[in-house]
Length: 127
Image 1 (tube, rainbow, N blue to C red):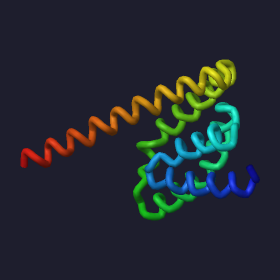
Image 2 (cartoon, rainbow, N blue to C red; image 1 turned 45 degrees about the vertical axis):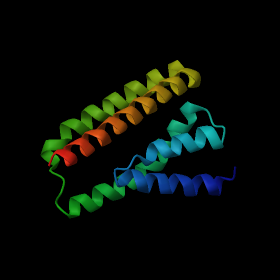
Image 3 (cartoon, rainbow, N blue to C red; image 1 turned 135 degrees about the vertical axis):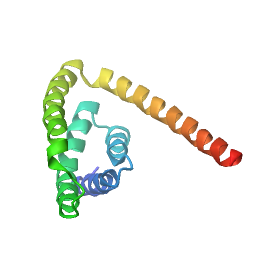
């Protein structure tokens, strides 16, 4: 797979993620299944490509006065510390275990989405 194709998919996934649509999962699935990349490596690339999109989103949201920095600063600090901790743990676990954990996570999210949709349908029917 060419680096150009990976870059385009990464950019599109980052853009989708900035909209809140789960583009990060799309990129990881693409890199592991279609590019044959190890799970840990795919997650690292996903983070690297997400950073510029996240920065652009932060700039745009700050200009629109949608971010209250005093309220989110504790979350930023805690998130950074936990990201470092769990990246260290992930490197110790290895790709095989991470792939299994990621698969279970995707299944749980899928089931949650199915239940959520049926709840919305039931609510709409009762109105």
